[in-house]
Length: 297
Image (cartoon, rainbow, N blue to C red; front, side, top):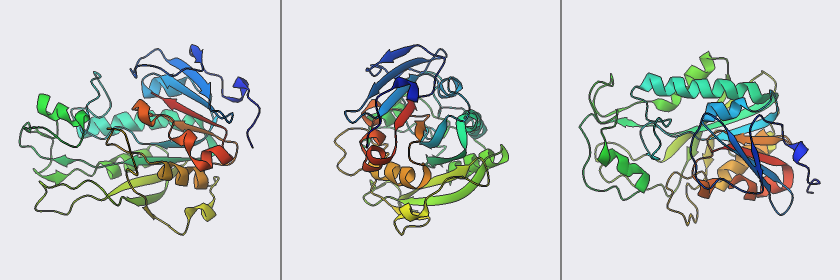
């Protein structure tokens, strides 16, 4: 059942608010700007247009029931924004940036809240800038325009190494105070092939790490649907958009159902491309069980 519309149900923030409209251009900024609206069934959304860490700082402590997010992967996409996360010159720089963001996220997460972090890995090629055109996604064309850290020398790993980004981030967050509860393997049937990878298996999985703030937290095991720590969910079911970094509704729904108590407010600190912004608000679990979604664009 939908709750009566009331903007006061969303946590107060320290930023200008624009009601019932979404931002037209996703640009990070140090001065946050806020946009709010609601779905036809009375579920509220809020988008804070800002740098992720600055945006989270506008939220009050312990105001978020659940965080579900997937930050930009290391040197996998270019969004034509100077200083974007994922373009750090070193692996340590990327890990530190994410650790800093999630330290602020821990402040706004309720003591019984859960964080679901989806993050993919990256290979270190060290063979210079690639040529030709990447047919998978326009956002990857930046590798043809500039020398990425993973294509140049000096990253500190043997050439052709799988960097191990997900576990580097997870262990850094654990050292920073998060409790790492599970490392779910997301198996993605229908993943795009990697025809140039002739001497290793193609990648068909990613990690979804589950973190908590405290030893005791809200979790509903019955919603795992008989899939424990291997979740089989298609990566891009019937995706009409050109954005090939999918965060499918079924994955969001699984996280919501087992990790967010009814009535809770959900945060995605890396909402990203606008085509995917309201994915969570359209899922069955969100409509039936949860009140509001916030994101930082």
